[in-house]
Length: 77
Image (cartoon, rainbow, N blue to C red; front, side, top):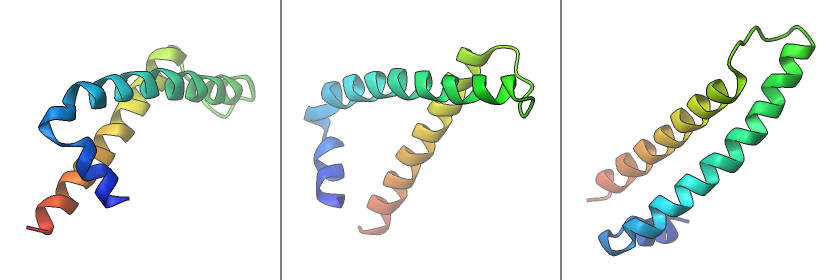
């Protein structure tokens, strides 16, 4: 897993990583919006802007993952 992550974060793969991240965020934000919408329908969540909330949540989760990768790689040096 770490080897694959190292390869993805090499400078020459930055365009690939950007494209993968963008597409993954679109798909995951859509799925998260479905979950949030169900929560709103059930009265569990009180959200006005469901798609935007889902996108923000997924960007935050993705950023957290990227930060963890950087911390792991820097601790190995």
